[in-house]
Length: 403
Image 1 (tube, rainbow, N blue to C red):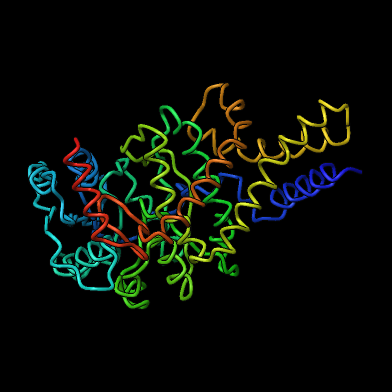
Image 2 (cartoon, rainbow, N blue to C red; image 1 turned 90 degrees about the horizontal axis):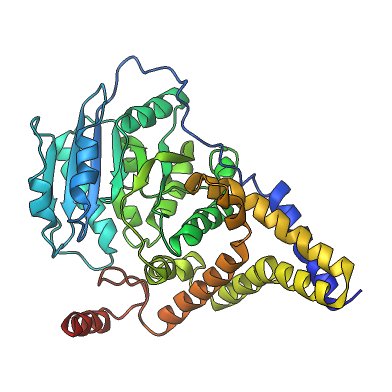
């Protein structure tokens, strides 16, 4: 047995383990239960929408909340997080005949707070003033468009199951270019890290949430110390899920009706989205980053290499092991691809997962490099942990001047 044959066998074994023993992460059957009974009394809900430079999307996203077919009281708080593109003006121009929308701005951000968390905290505080009796807070993004019954379906599920948190992985835009492959792959890798069935199992330690759509009980949020307990979190949604699950059950599922209206024009935008938090996910540990990249190589590079080399050398065993690993990989990716692509080409796209794995490995290395060179989690001209904010402002000003 050659070294490559042995490594290909390890790769195939790893894929069999992931497929059958890793919380059924690749299945997409975790969906809201529309068969649940309506609550006798629909509780009040306050939606909090942080927005930073979202003028292009805020009318559709907030408008979809104002058009909710929700039997109870629903109010919305939009928090302008130091926008420079007229987000507040766009939001205040949205038709709101019942005066359910409050638009406010973040006060100066205290030291130790991540920008988004400060905006969410500001919104939650304003929501307390807007509707102090609300049972639930809906945390959502300013680029997410909700279907008309989404809030009702979230509340129905939470009430029927006694959940402290209900979250949906909204459908991201994957309509063009690199996004057609890399966005489904992003959701697939997220599911590997946080297998939804394990998140939803009260007896399992795995916990997480998807920040685009999170309904949380207000008393559960108070129990963990409010948003202030998450003030320094870059991956705030999963941190919220972990904190809430320590005291009560949570649920995370897929949806195709709630979607992000933010387009991803090219590889650069997706790269920025991933690299801003990949190293944070690894706890800023170089050894874990290296281990992750080696693991990605074993899972995604070895099968293709083994198949190619095995065919070239007439080594049937190596080729079959590589093909088996690659086929298992594609089979587990296909259900996620089908959320985004219903055409027959979806099956072919599933076989392209090795390319996505290589690119995500490169993004992980870039995320580590950015952290250790002082650029940290940079996003919309703002930086997070481990970054030099002055250098980012300087680069942003230079870039703006160049344009």
